[in-house]
Length: 178
Image (cartoon, rainbow, N blue to C red; front, top):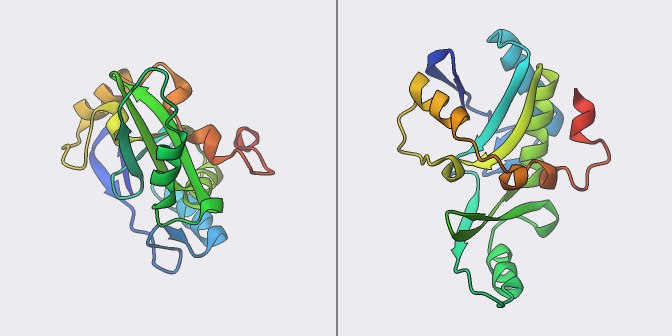
């Protein structure tokens, strides 16, 4: 995980210990939350809010053609069925962006525990988006200008964010964290 700040051109890389996260699977939820909260405290990041941009390494995505009147439920279900995450732990989101339909999916447990860990460290997660939504990919070079551009060009529609989907089945709701 890489943390970018709009006031600092040098990104901070967070490497999850394998006893906490391995192959997108959370091995120790409480440990992961404590690890992230401690990281935020050590780095003295201000109590603020942030956007969690998912890199291509932590989500699966597929573009589907937009066909008027065609139900794509089965095609989407087939795509989700081949993702190597148990169905009960899979979170997905369907969006239309620039005239194209995308479905992206990730591990719900990873999202929940990262958001909780950030909250425990004082950082409120306002959105969870795949990086492609803001026009970046894993080859994008980040700097102060890139962060400012992302912030300025965030989709106005909250409908692109996976955050509500991540917490859809949680007993403790994410908005109670702050």
